[in-house]
Image (cartoon, rainbow, N blue to C red; front, side, top):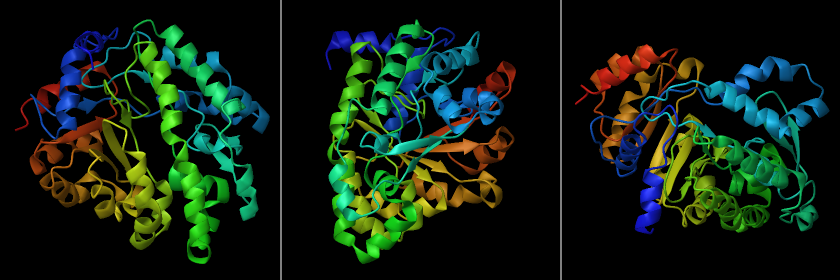
Length: 369
C-alpha cells in the first residue's frame, strides 16, 4: 500500500462521524486481538432501513417485490433518509451495501431469486446432476448487472455521507445448497459425495474473480472494503460463512466445507467468520484451524438462546484462544456483561434509541478494564 493511498484512506472522513481515524484505529487493533482505549462498539440494527419499509413491501405481488428490490433509486434513497441528520458514535460506520439477498451469488450462474420483504431466496435449478453443465458465471445477467448499478449509483450519491460496500457473497456450500436445495444436498453427501465436491468446486471457482470485480469498483472510487457487517478495512475484508453447515455433522463439514473455506479466505487481509448460532458453532475447531480466519461474529440466536450471559463461558474460551469476537448485546445486558468479561478482543453491537444512550454507553465502556 503506498503512503499516499494510506493517508487518503485514513483521512476518508464521514459527515456526522466526529473521529473517523480513531474509530478505524480501534477496529484495526481489534483485528489484531488488541485494544486501545476501549473495545469498539457499533450502535445500529442491521438493515434498519429495510425493516422500516417492510409493511409497504409486504402488500406487493411477487413481481412487485422484485421490482421494488430492483429499484436502484428507491433502495439508495431509503438508506440516505435513514441516516439523514444522524450522528455516528463509536464504531458505527454508515454503510450502504448493495443487497439482493444471500443467494445472489448462486443467481450469477442462472438461479432465479424469489423476493420477500427483507430478503430473497434461490429457486433450486440442479434437479439432475447433468444440470450442472448449465452452471456458468454470467456477468451480463440481471442480478450481476443490478448489483453493479446499485454500487455505482450509491457511490455517486454518497458525497461523504456514508461508505459503499459490496454485497453478501455466499460461495461454496451455501451456493451449492442454493443450486441443489439444502435438504437434497444433505442426502447427496451420503449418496453422491463426489458429485457434491464437484458442485462445491464450481461454487468457489470464480470467487476471487467476482470479489476482485466489485472490490475494484469500490477502490477506484476511494471506498474501503466493507460489507453488511459495517466493519471496514483499508485492504481486503471478507465475511466467510456457511449457514448450510448447521444441517451437517463436523465430519461432513471437515470433508466438504473446510477445503472450501481454506480456498475462500486465501486472498483476503481480514476474514470475519459469521457463526450463525449453535448449529454452526459445532464446527469451530475446523473453522479456527484456518489461520486466515482472523475473527468471529457470534450470533447466539433468539428465544431460549437469549440472554447473552448464558454464553459467557463459551466467549471466555474464545478469548483465551486469542480470537477476536463480535458480540450482539441488548443494552440492558451491558453492565453484567462487563463484570463477567474482560474487554480484550471484543467488538460489541447494541441497538440504541438516541444519542444520549450512546454517549452514556461510551462513557461506561471507557472504564472497562
